[in-house]
Figure 1 (cartoon, rainbow, N blue to C red):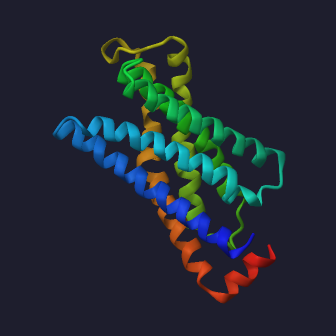
Figure 2: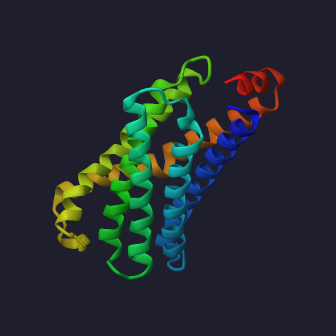
Length: 207
């Protein structure tokens, strides 16, 4: 992996972190102020999905060397498509926000599976243990979004009548909006800082 690829890793990870935290801020503003922050949040969610899919497919995924890691990269790409679809559903008013959020949650759960795999596969010589633990925790939390899958099949779109179990899936947004963005910023800053040092550049160009 060349030095330009290391920089790309960093930029994509930082972008995911910034967009994720921006989506959280816009969601908070929606409850306080109202529109247009709901639409901004929807666009941010879709953008975060795209960034995550690209990050999995073309940057951090270069280190994959097992069937499991390849499968989870594919999972992240599918998850990115779900995240974009969820945003598109609500922006276009095809569904209400509730069903759209279930679709997005399921998508980020699939991205979470990749996040767990990549943090478990990276060695301590590349990332510190606390960073890898954060990534795994973020991914596991995002996996709660898989609870939404039956709700999507049932086409649940009324928050007031949704069954109690569906709310378990919303735990996944803690990972998506908080833990994952912090991980992205941390990984991105390490990659960008490392790309500026001769030792890392030499290692990257020989990888």
